[in-house]
Length: 179
Image (cartoon, rainbow, N blue to C red; front, side, top):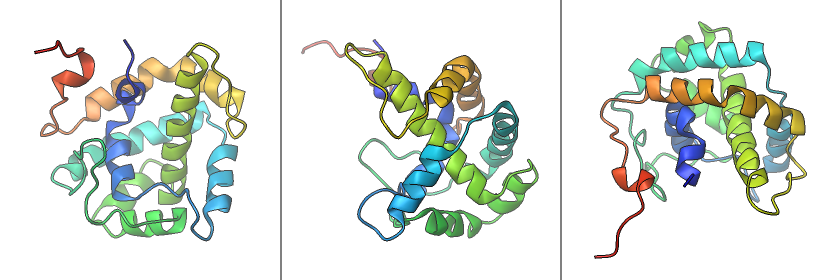
């Protein structure tokens, strides 16, 4: 059975970064603008190639970064970014992050927006696969199609860049038996 944690398995590094910089959603100033930017981002092959390279570049830098292996419902103590601008500033404040992303041909902002767009799109793709599932109004079907076409590559990227010290919880993939 597909769990929500399995949907974005390909985004392990991105999820670690995302835990460090809280999603730019909610009642904060600029959140609507940020949500529109994420929702209107068009996923492309060129963007995915840059994102994949940036993610591979980031993998060695993410070892030992606080919050990188946080469990559901947990966050590191620095996850206080409330906008894309704050998220970018927080990431750029970590040694080597900006250079690793820029060397792949992206800005830190593009990387953050791509991360949230692919996460949002993955959740929408999953929702569409559920009985009675409907496409959320803020997600483009073109992005869902792109996500589905590249899901295996995204999953492999996540597996290839998963930090060695972040063991996957076996309970996530196996239903627990009553004791």
